[in-house]
Image 1 (cartoon, helix red, strand yellow):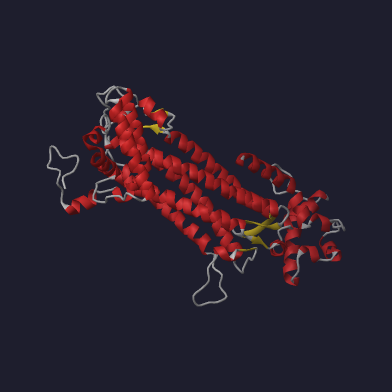
Image 2 (cartoon, one colour):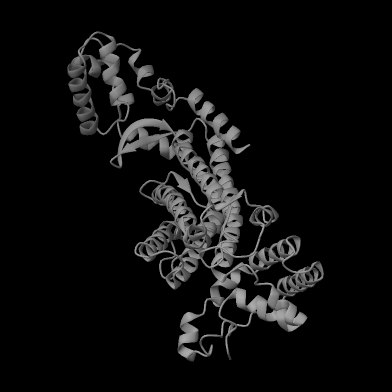
Length: 457
């Protein structure tokens, strides 16, 4: 079948080349944006007197019919067409005759695909922002429900200092709120209309690019026609934002996997978000969290693929840029899929506070507070540090924790120890003493919760 671009060539390509060149099997995702953009373009052409209002009405009615039929399933994509643009134009011409051929006046597939892609990713970005907000809400709910639960805080994956579980997971809320800010900022730069740039140099027709942009919800138009058709920064920026977002989800998923293990047993995952083993009946595998962790690498790969594709391209449009869609679509779909499972998985987690507190006590993470106690009594810090270390060694030798050592034993190390030391090394006291802004005390956590709530609103 001869192509719609037949002219200087016969428009007949080898079937293998056809299949290699075709993009409709993935760019058909943008059919709604393509048709909506074409309707605005027809209205603009009529508004500027480039085509008659009668022709514009016929074009718009025909396009609406195609959109309705695709939405209902009455019309299916013809995968023999080269791309979504050619498919829509072909069906339109079949339905309304030669008037359909007027639709492509004063535009090129180069600015048309750039328009479709920006519109498509704009709506998906809105969805991702909403899903990320839901994930932050799930963190907020867990933090509220476990506000005063004590757990060990870690550095180097070694028990370090006592913290609140709520404080720990709110760190992820802060990360995801930054992701929302990044995505919002990315969307702003994305929301610039390229339509009217045509192939690369603009058009000889007196078009109204601002009208078309406003009709389609854009904030402005790109100011350089070459940049309009060759820019894919908006794809790369979105994929970069998604890579950082996925990194945050992956880090949290890693902790969920650790916490749900028998070695930690800080939490229990819902059966709805775990699987069993085909051979070991006792297993309850955190597959959803593991898949989120695994799919993060996939999103990174999508970003690197498009960066590599774009790095050596001369201006303006090159067919290499057809590779943008599969990569960015996959990154978007993967991130959305992960967010959709992450929030409900997090909401259904059950914490096991007694295990967290036992781990905190067993890790001697109040040893710093023990040293601080002696410093307040007048002992130099280095001397206090040494005595605290010796007391930890004594506990390990006797199989107990600092809270369980009798006062007489403490006083063999220093006469500065008094009965009040037990209150000083109580884990809740240790947590409540971290009064610096952003610290782990309950009042700080309450401030963080208020901040998160305000940001979500």
